[in-house]
Structure formats: C-alpha cells, structure tokens
Length: 130
Image (cartoon, rainbow, N blue to C red; front, side):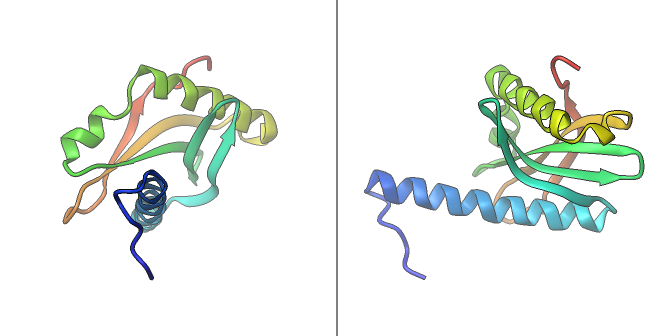
C-alpha cells in the first residue's frame, strides 16, 4: 500500500479517512467482544453520521468513534455541534428502523489513541430530540 503524500490536502484527507475506518473497525471488534452485535455502520442522514449502530439485549447503542493522538483529545472532540448532527442522524435511523424504537436507546462513544485499547463510554452524551 502506498502512503499518501501528507503535504497534499487530498492525501491528508485520504489518510484521515483510512485512520477513521481502521479505528471504527477496532471499536467494532472491541464492542463485539463485549457482546454487542452490529446493525449498521457509517450511517449518514440529515447532515449527520453515526459511526456504529449496535445492539446488546434490549439496548441499541449509537456509537461515535473518535481517534486522536491522546485519549483526552479524543474525548474533547465530541462538541455540541457534533452531538446535534449525530442526534439528527439517530432520529433519521430510527425513522427507517421503527421496530427498534421501543428499546433502550443510548449514545455511546469509543475513544482511541495509539498503543491503547479502545475506551468504551456507555451513555456518553444525550441524544437530542428523543
């Protein structure tokens, strides 16, 4: 695999996209080891995106995955604007999958940093508008 030219804006975007996909895959594996089962990945709608939608028992976890150089930086990356866009996407997902509406719905986060196991935070923030 050829490394993108990080001096090139398109190369940086491509590298960021690849790191994001790798991070999501690692987060998915970690959550599956905890008993979660995937329902959707990279769902986009209403101007927002949900990285992972998983189910465990009667809980649906809408998961935001953040990878940064440091775990503290990853935690700070979910700001009010991101939460609002994420919440719009959750409402859109539920509109397309109404059979899950009666279950417990939760916004989780998984934070990633180099040389660390993914940190899963259940109920990391509130889903707005539910």
